[in-house]
Length: 78
Length: 225
Image (cartoon, rainbow over all chains, first blue to last red; front, side, top):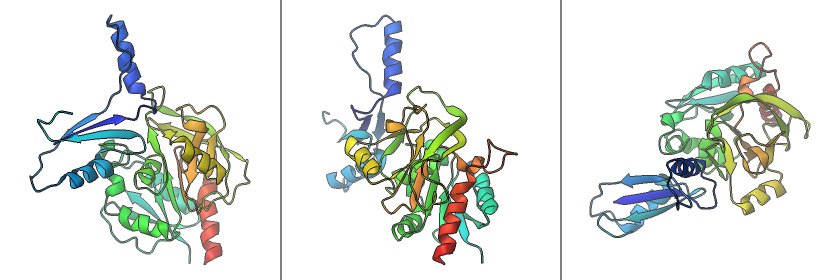
């Protein structure tokens, strides 16, 4: 199982901005914005259903006040 | 019999000793509570102190908010027990759902450690001894102290008089609407990023302004007894 968590677009992400500025210093152009988040890899029994996985993401791995998240099974396209 | 105020220690808590000292300075008995406790030992109020509980793993306060001791704290708070969260304690109360919003990385990405002036803007269980509008000076020491919430929540907090503390200068951490501390709807759960427990005696802090939070709750508890 993969859970990707990112700060919501409307919440200022100063870490992402610092990364974006560093790219400019490397001479990289064309990167408009960077958001820095977290990537969780979970080993999960087949018996655990989608609703339970969604509950894990919403109630623990992400804070819905400031973050958005995507849950997907490995091999599945995001 | 003096009031008994619990002070929780999680692995990584730093300010429990100063919080307990502030409780004693105010004239109450400080009761140590451990993160694995499931019994609050009949305390009349609880302080959730600052530090880096569980190393700030996952998110600041996220693991502590789901620790055994917080179950009974949340239940008691919902029944009206006063709870004060300071710094990491504020982050824990937000993660536990007792207070709205969240605390995120300071805008400037720097850990801020200095004295700061706050305006007391609401009469709550923890600020009843202050005149609304009073300015107090206490230390601020945090890297993730920027209060955020959606616009609707911010409007509601301001409309319901639940912004308890506001920075008396533009928030150095970028907190929305310069919010330093907020309360629950019943005014009994309060969280703030700066540290009143470090400002209870001019010998060891910038002054004694912070003691007022602890004497306020004590006055409230004594009046209720």
